[in-house]
Image 1: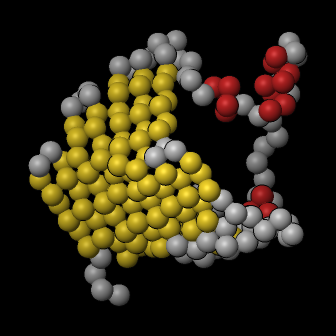
Image 2: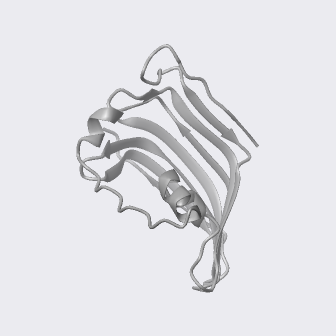
Length: 173
């Protein structure tokens, strides 16, 4: 229910001392039968939201460029810790309800172009089709922003669907 962070304001980039910690997050997302969501207003750029409230037609957003990657190169985060988070998705348009609870995510230091140690665990449930279980995994995540590719290496994984656990560990490397 609180977020704690630290930033070295004397520099233009985040320090590796920055720790992102989120405890007890509850996020409830929904889409109504007409397709509108409860986060539509948050997903718009501030300029677009201001233009729409003024009755103006929003300008087209510029296309993303590959030059955005170098801006990320100077960002370093000492780690991310999300604990006991709960996420729900209710989609009236599709008639689907999903929930993730007990979500715990822990990472090592995060720097552009450097693999990141990660551990993740969560319970899940779905109303239609009826399903529930738990997923736990750990490993090293490689991120290639240019290709928009995330890869989990050296992983161990446990899944429980209903009452049956399944495990998969990485071979020794």
